[in-house]
Image 1 (tube, one colour):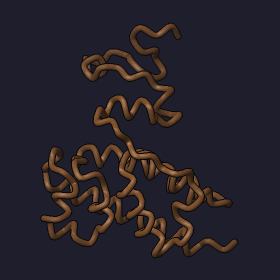
Image 2 (spheres, helix red, strand yellow):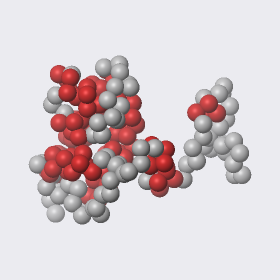
Image 3 (cartoon, one colour):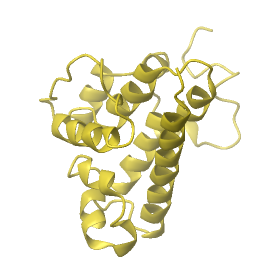
Length: 173
């Protein structure tokens, strides 16, 4: 199957996502909602997908979610066989978790250029919990589930050897 044009469109979209993230960071407002800034800032008007994220998602949260949602894309886009489900499911899980309407709008947006994007995935369920920690624990990716969360204060101490390859405090390995 010749999917080079789809790969190109996905790569261009990844570039747009990174450009939008850069523009959001330049606002200097990490606690501001992305949707609000997208409506107000002229530099963000061209990034239609920003209006699809959860209304209360902050710039800081968006940055973390984008990194998680798209980090596999460069590698996947270079693979011989394009793993369509991986490309879409990481974005759905990490950027649109609990935001079914946003996900559906995003898929429609993406399908204008890449007709198969988001097809073939299991039905998305709406999140009913407002507790981010609970929702994150329930929907943790395999990578996230393998890492035990530690309080931030324990990790930013003075040059102690904590974390990989050194065991975390309290671990038995």
